[in-house]
Length: 170
Image 1 (cartoon, helix red, strand yellow):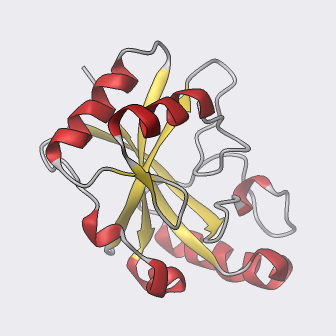
Image 2 (image 1 turned 180 degrees about the horizontal axis):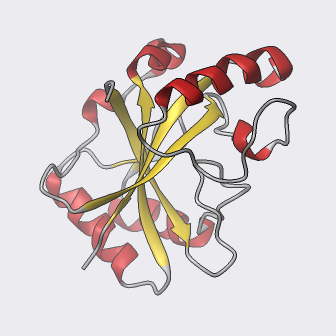
């Protein structure tokens, strides 16, 4: 598998209607909990509007706050390394703390505009069969969809390939 660069965490609501995606329009975010997390543990959002814990202590507090809320998931989004240059001058993800011992479940690949994380897989674009994440080993198809989305939806380009993982909180 090619290299993916972790870009941040998000808190999502898990219910029967949840459709896994990097896109908050498809898989709802818990905006109230995110606001609470930002205030209570002084965590920052980065240029991707994702939560960016900068150390183990802040990360542990984030996990604890998500764990205390029923039907919530902590999601780690990573962008394909070759697609990561768009925010280069504003990128602070080198400060992003990742717990390399955390249990994770790879949910799949998404193809999103790198400015707002709108998923091309859910846009019903001609030539893109979507409405669900791609399998993690289907990078060739994800790259094909990325190029197609860039040409079909230039107002949202550039698109990038995102790896969506759920942190399994016990």
